[in-house]
Image (tube, rainbow, N blue to C red; front, side, top):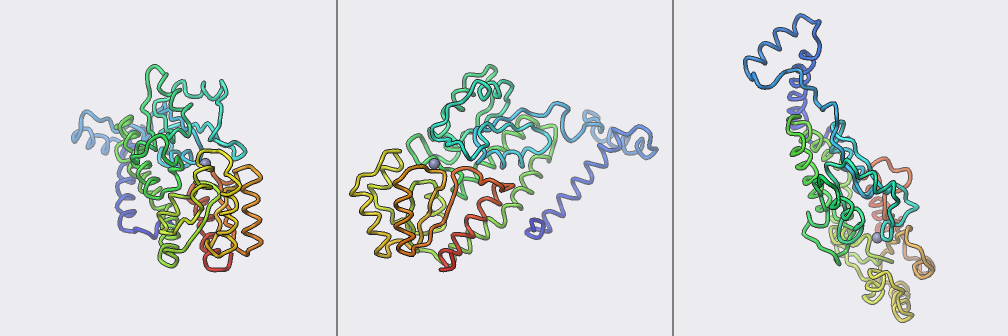
Length: 326
Ligand SMILES: [Zn+2]
């Protein structure tokens, strides 16, 4: 699937990869007779670079990621040249009010690169990284995309944001390990290719349903809604209360119920990782009014093997719901 997107580019990469493999393979194998010739040629061309250099160093770069929404992406970009530790990996945990354990803090100890979400979502991770000596490079997703504390922290739901953060991660990986040449750009290219289904699904919804209305029980999906050019009709008071993690007023709930029963939202996007009786009440109003409900999750869904797989499954349910087949 991923290879069909840009065959010429992938083909070009393969040639480079083969050439590198040929050189490293020769250098590390001292028994084959062809080795000598290749190694000699290489030595003549670039005396400072021994052909024996493996693609990754014996000690991989230590990378720590605060939450699994970024963990899978970073793992794919880093490949075998880094050891990636993701601190919060369970969908049973709400990252919004997470208290790190001593073991979580300890997992940062040797970090050379730390990837945090920022926007006050995982301040504990940022603080832990800042306190390390030597201080690691910190990639703060929120800052990478020009957001700040107080902004909607769900950066991983913004498609442009995801690619921008991935680019920043690759840049830091390259900076830490320049000796591996095209390894990280190659990883980035194949990750990018693996995201084609995600881009396609977004383009499809945007193409067919631009301007359609949706409402949300909380702000997790807002950046994606914007990217899809859908219209968020969630009553303002309700949205504000949800963003501040306070209870909406009875009037806000009433306004939401009226929106759903009067056809003011084509779908309700529902974060199943949010607890509380009010979102559940809104959901049952939607169901009673035959407004399709699209379930989304805050963190990578149980069973999804990648960020792309997780997001594509949700976008497909949204497409079905907007098509009236939800
Ligand atoms: Zn959230």
